[in-house]
Length: 409
Image (cartoon, rainbow, N blue to C red; front, side, top):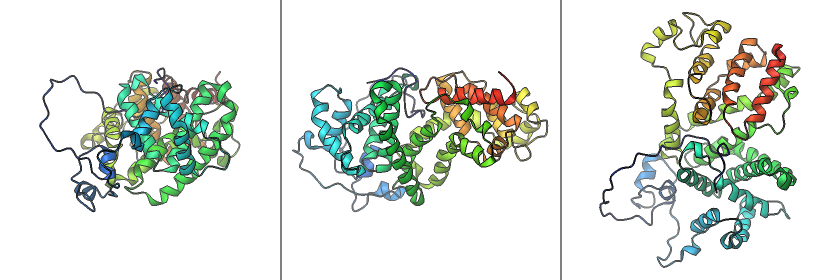
């Protein structure tokens, strides 16, 4: 199942599809069927060395082998294949109905759900998560494959599975509110469990859990941005103390979480299932966010690429540098975004801006400095051009609140 444009969940830039190439027959090779779990998960060839394969040793990954099984085993007994059939089947199909109890039991045992917890909504949410894709982000097949791999990873990482289920229920409540409104408490329970367990995992970041942490971080940061109902009066600009203001601004400050996680996992990232996705996203917007260090001083002196109106408002002039003006980098990056086409095609760049903000800029927002509010509003207006279900209410609320605060309409 695919959804209309703007309904996807994982909005990272997937590796772009290559132009059609002339077919060449592949050379015969020995297929690895008994490789380690990590190589199978990453879909790379394993040399099957034991107790640790060479690839995992090189990348410092936790290498383990599954118990060997008879080659005559039926695919119906393969848990991964059973799960794939369940995810790809229609909710009214026989395959879905046959798998419901088994999947529900798996989820119940994995998540240690309270006694009497209904498995049906959780099974429905898991199936729904797999079907979330966005045609604007490219071919559906690569997106579906990443959704499947994230779900498979969720069965190894309970905190990620909690986040998957909570997020899918949130989307179900958005798209079919009458049917799924009663599941708000279930959604809240899974968010709470996801956050608690995610924070525990952050104390032991390593190659063994980085992929699960990346997946959970993406879902949790989206959740922090989502606003359930339009409420400009609840904006941070109307908070009455610095502490309350900072709390009301967490929807933005938490967005740097992925960047911090990336910084903490540099030694092992090449072994991550997310490596190609992150690299594709970084390459696509390198010109917007990165500055050539070889001639940065000349560009800074010339006020290179800065929007004149924003630069003037923020006190940026010839000779200003990121070191002496806290607004320099936010304005420089935002100026680059202003030249990109509006809408979903630039979504990765828009989110990249908020993920690169520094504490000093957040402090200006907490102080409600006019320049900081105008810069944020300009970015929110760009983000509002993206038709995604979890963005619109937040953008409209915050833009209206800033307008009122600054004396506009």
